[in-house]
Amino acid sequence: MGEITAVERGLLENMLYVVITKTKYDENYNFTQAGEDEAMFDDYRKKLKVVFDNLAALVPELVLQVSKEYVLTTLNRWQSSPYEDVEAAVSLLYNLGEALPASHGNHFSGPSQVKTSTMQEMMQLLVTSGVSGHSHPAVSLQFFECVARYEKFFTSEPHYIPGILAAFLDTRGMRNPNPRVRSRTSYLFSRVVRCLKSNIVGYTEDILSQLTDLLVLAPIDNGQIPPLLTNDDQLYVFEAAAMLIIAGNTEPGHKEGLMRNLLSPVFAKVTCLAERLAREQDPVNQASIAKSICHATAVTARTSKAFSNQNSIQACGCVQLYLDALQLFINCLNVGVEREVVGAGVRQLMHRLVVCLDGESLLPLLPPASQALLHTPSPAVLTEYLPLINQIITKFQKEMSPFVHTIFMPLVSAIFTALSEPIEENDEEEQRTRRLLQRSYYLFLTTIVSHHLLPVLAALDNTILQQVLMSVVQGAVEFPDPVAQKNCFVILRRLTEAWGVKDMGPPGFVEFLYTQVVPACFLAPLKTTFDLNDAQTILALHESVTCLQTVYRKRGDELITYLRSQYFPKMDLSPELVNEYCQALTSDAKVFRNYSKIFFQRAKS
Image 1 (cartoon, rainbow, N blue to C red):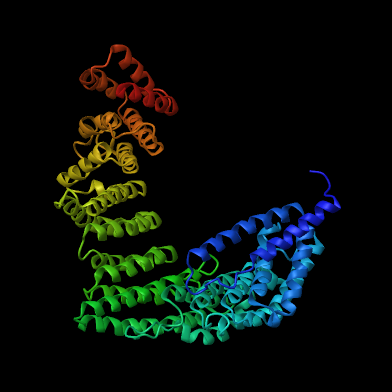
Image 2: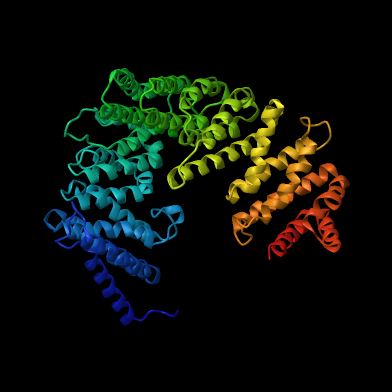
């Protein structure tokens, strides 16, 4: 594109002013009860932003100059300007962040001195003008959005940080009369703390003292008085508080003390709630208490996100604090009321602690936690428990062997029982739950065979092992879910790799290869439900092909002889096709994969 003429530049400038003017909220816009008109205007603003972005790409200097003039003029007289103008000015500053390119999102350093100084000037006015105290929620929200977007401004000018923290913590932010502002600033506060924690740690204890009332769990019988923050909002504030504590340059004992101060009121409340739950007879009250316990668990889990590789839970001396917390919530689960709700919280906390803790700390609590979680092993409970065990196995691998050995049989028996319970044909929800459980079961077995826990299967009673193996073959062939089928073939392949040589595996395994595994590699792709045009199904086909080649690697020409003399005659294949197939089977993996797809396409046509 050539140089822009003065006339064209004038037209573009006019267009930019039109965009700014049209961005302003209409006086009839309803912020408390948004309806169809409000949704249409929000959509219109998004379209205007696209025009603004295009103008910024075309004439960035002009957009920056006009934006600066509008922002500075409006913010300097915000108290006497309509809220629509003020909101448009702060939105304009916010939108520049996406419209103008910046290295790593930093608009306050870089080669363009004009741009960086202009952005600094606008941000300085934003944070010093007092507009953060504007009474209209739309302006308040946009102010905090700007602060969060341009957090790098505060790393270069940290003397503005105390003022911004004050805005977040007082009636302008998380104590604002408007619930939308309170909710959004809670989230933005956690974002700002995450980005600026190294600049903020000096204010940690002052911030924590100001957050105290926002960190109190809402009473159950609060009547019609809603708490300042919703449960979801509170999670962000707890996370921010924990990040500040952990980021400090203090001794581990001091960090542990602050974390204990943060969480002890939560644990004290939970202890009272558990006692009340045990006494409560009213189902409605039971549900409310359980939800509060679940929220307390979520809060505890959320604070663990503050730990990192640099500041681990061990380095900060907080291991015992979280182990005690987990035991407390397991005790709540053992009250035996509202198990589903309380159990969801316990699982959430355990998922987080698997990330943070080492095996020596966490594994002793696995048996009591599992016993409590699986007290009533419905299909839904089992489906939600299995991903937790998979996560733990994946992390701790061989360390998990004693536990998996103990739990495997009861767990698999519970799964088989749950899957065999009769259900009504038209109960689609229950059928979906069963399918999810079956898929989770196969993923559980895949996790075991993929993480050095095959000895657990080898140690099973032979009858039980046969039952498990047959369930895998059935999944590979009959279960119309390509992801589960792929996992089943992964299991069969891993077992073949480990046990496919004589005397290496359980008694009868080689016979099982020929009676079940090899036929499954043909029967599954020949099913009408096995769609060779579907990407996931092709992955399942590839795994079945790899499984068959693994049998060949372990059994050699014995497999070829079996196919020629026993299996292929049942399929009524021509001698030429038999030779062709056997030759492909003994070729490299890619050749055999490609050949197998063509082979089964022809067989099904």
